Image 1: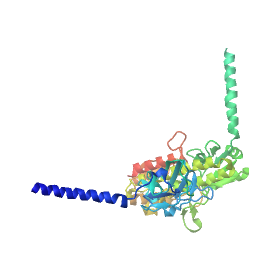
Image 2 (image 1 turned 180 degrees about the horizontal axis):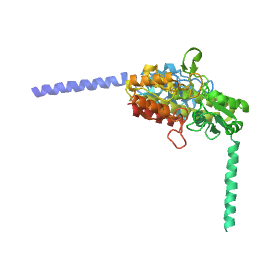
Image 3 (image 1 turned 180 degrees about the vertical axis):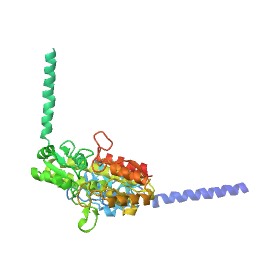
Image 4 (image 1 turned 90 degrees about the horizontal axis):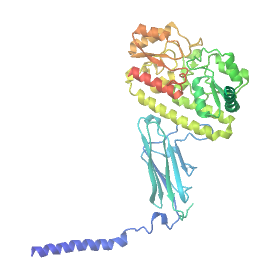
Length: 166
Length: 306
């Protein structure tokens, strides 16, 4: 009698779980219709920069013309992207929406940021992420040893059939 | 056989050496007053420009007397560079450039100098290179001047200057890290003359003296206002050393060490070593570049005071 009761309970629990997952899957879980490289909508890229420091103007910056002594330089495939240095705050992700200049094939994003000299006694870092259609496409963390500017290049490749939204 | 060997050697000399000398002569020439400024200019110019310094390593710019060879050097220059703020005693570099009709750039232009003394006797301290931040101003002024005369190679000069400025930034952080090893109470820097005010202000030496140099000789070793050694200055230095308990005092490479050695004897304090001050070290020495001289100075100071 006890054995039959255990078997019945087992059937009820397992059957219930199976029914729950069978019912839940198709209705509630968003399903990616394709891989990231085959997205059938126009691509929009975002750049997310998350530093361990607040960038500040660099007293050691080159000042030979009308260039700003900015604490932050972002270049996409060699083209400078206007990102104000004072928007880079410690621990806060800075999002550059609709990142222009990304092409099918090989790409490279260059980031150079100037940590405060007052905090030169410790290493600093900045995390760089390229987001495409809500999915991370490429990411890296660049480190600067004590006193140095944080500099790095993030290379990534994009499939040639991608269409661009800008 | 012997004749043919000599002839071959002469032909090689004519074919290899003479054309290379001729090529060197076609390059523009920059003449700088001091070794530090010449080093900054070399870091920006690379091999595109010949950079010469009037002062030799170990020479004193305050008391320097230009020679006929200096006049000839300036006459052959395309651009002259000076420190300014009267570092060059009686403004000898400005005089040389003016007399030769050559363009002159003052490397400290745009800087906020430290003011020494008060009222009519106040003077702007010319030893600004002792702060790497100020060294960056020198480099930017020199880079601007070079680009202004050779805009075709702008990208190259900018790339070199940018790399060197990064090195100066790392040097500054490194000095802070090194100086941090000296307990605050022992950060007492006594030198022969008042050359280290910017260094003391930047890295917080000599708190009891308003973060300025302690030295028996004023800002200049010459006879300018506020320069030279007076009995009053010497007495104050001896009192400062006794009151502060300075563990060591320092002589300078460009100045006669006699006075500071006498003070060391009077106060019973040891000599911590020889610091590069108004000029860099000789070729082949660790202090033959600006970064090298700053590095060696800091290592010596930290070793003597920590």
